[in-house]
Every structure is written in C-alpha cells, then in structure tokens.
Length: 106
Image (cartoon, rainbow, N blue to C red):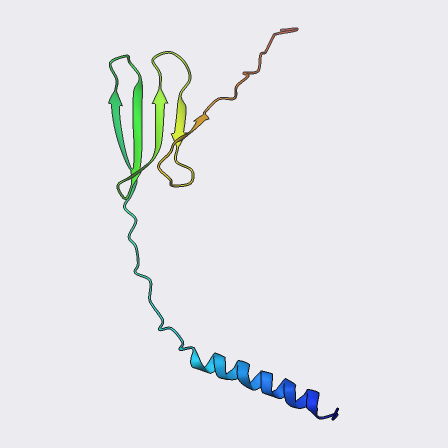
C-alpha cells in the first residue's frame, strides 16, 4: 500500500464535503417585525355569590385571573406556559403561622 494513498483518500473526502457545503444556498436574512405590546387590561366583575373576579389580558390574551371570594383569601389562576390552561396559585401558604403572646411588659 502506498504511503500517499491515505492522504489522497482524506483529500478526496474533504473535497466531497466542501462540494456539498457549496451546493447549499444561504438563506436570506429576515427582519423580525417589531411587535407593539398593548398595555395589560383588567376586567372586574362581581358574581352573584359575591365573589370578585379580575381578568388580566395582554394583547387580547387572558393570562391571569384573580378571584376574591366574599369570605376567604384571594387566589390566582395563571396560564404559566401559554397553553390556555390555568394553574392555581394561592396568594397565602397552605398553613398560616400562628402567633401567641407569651409575655408582655410595660
């Protein structure tokens, strides 16, 4: 086997790869359109049972709902990943801390 054969094979493979790369056209540059975000809007309504519902929208898309029951803490529904499904996030933790007065002085 000739010592030049591996070198010739390597050059042939390199030339074939270069030819393939030259055949592929370069895509044209596309400028992204500047999107003007509308300011968020809030629609507030009070249900018959006394619950206050606040709907937050941006660019016409509902992304968060705050529900304040007549009795009880408020909670939020968020569309965190933009799929149209709302996930519940309570504004308060599940267990509230309890405080006692152990000692007082003047």
